[in-house]
Length: 266
Ligand code: ARG
Image (cartoon, rainbow, N blue to C red; front, side):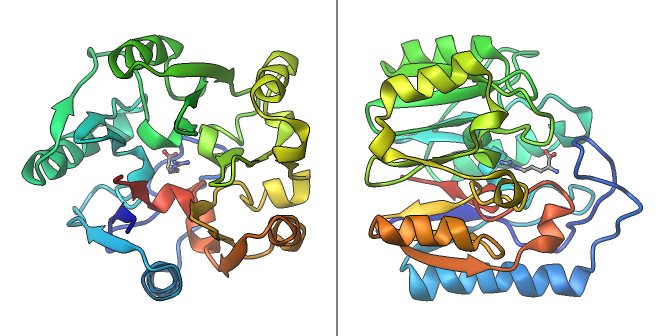
């Protein structure tokens, strides 16, 4: 059974602006955020049959809810993130502590080598993709590729609205990928096309990409994604996936949705 790391939104809010979605003036409706988060958890536990590991929220760290950025887990090893912005750097110690106390072997990267975890490193068992420039440093991927003996295809993120790879690219269990082509340059689009045949690529059009259709969580044949993406849902269903749409617009105010709120632990 799949396990996901999550963090309750007790202290979630918009307290700074580090991506184009965040506006301090665009206040979070806290009660609504809590309701949306709990509904997402209900879908995972009841409809998708996932085991959730809840870490303790910390006052003053409003983005700790986005556990996709805790790091990346490979077997029993956790590579802890190194955040680009000072606003999120204090989260590193909390994520590291969670991994240590849960029996993971922790790997850290050199100071100043930015890497934002499963927000920027995604893939299939054989081949991984690394998003860089907006947050993670391309050099992190050569180190991880050597350490884990996996090929990592670097993809430059061209559009600041899609600042983490998981906002515009989502590998699915059947070898398919959901993605927003314009978030990448011609080189990136070719690199994706070289690895994933056309029949397995599901391009998302801009209106749904902007509702974070690609920020989805795929567990077996189930895909949990933000509400408001009907064309994406149809495309997924046509390929045999079951879709579960959840309203997560309070988290979009921070530039995150379903996938950002979870970290795959196996
Ligand atoms: N406000 C957060 C940030 O800008 C959102 C992170 C979303 N996480 C993700 N994996 N895309 O860092």
